[in-house]
Image (cartoon, rainbow, N blue to C red; front, side, top):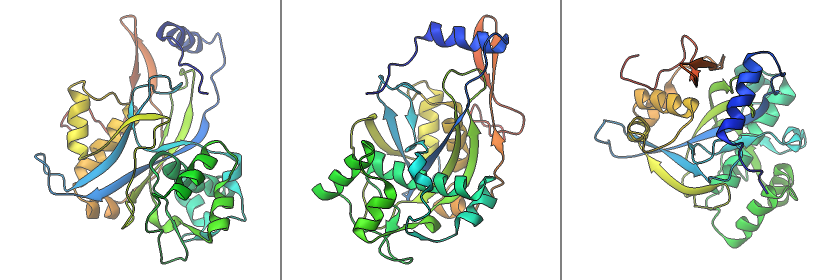
Length: 287
């Protein structure tokens, strides 16, 4: 069972203690998140793509109530070298992600595993050119739950079903690190992936109480109006997707992956996350 989120006052006290040097920062845990994308009729804002978002339940320890992309922390078993693999090698991913080969393997596996756990979409297939067509049966749901309770690893699932992970279905997008002064911290690689033909995400419950396909501009507009709660990396990424406009634009975008870490500052007695210079700005229509 997830631990309850820290009370706002407790989290603020922790942040102030870190900023004052009274306590050591928490180490950032490696994590991966995936922007599931699909083509769509152009929205009122001009987007011709939609992205899959989940709203985290209020009881979650990290980002309760926030709209996020599927994702989560790396499991030690995600680095299993025996896992069936097709597409760019872990060595290639290491170069793209700025990580060693073992860490890159674990991050890509975590991205695939977490996407299946949180949406039912599996980026894998029986060969390097095929993708699983449908994962909505009861047997697939049993496998998803086994991954969640850690009685089954991704490597074990793929081996039993005769599948290989399709790393070519992922595209490295960005890297965000939780501010030093936060009580819970993640070093998260963001990936983009097009929803495989035939597969459909499903509302699986657990960590999310609502799911939605939204155009990036519509989601960002909801955040700006205060209707959709989001962390800065999510809102900033939606701005980038909106600027791309289409699936082709996203997949063809040139990306340079370097860490982005907001800074916690106290302004007039209020703690605020401030984006570093050069980070994408979701707040207004300026570049």
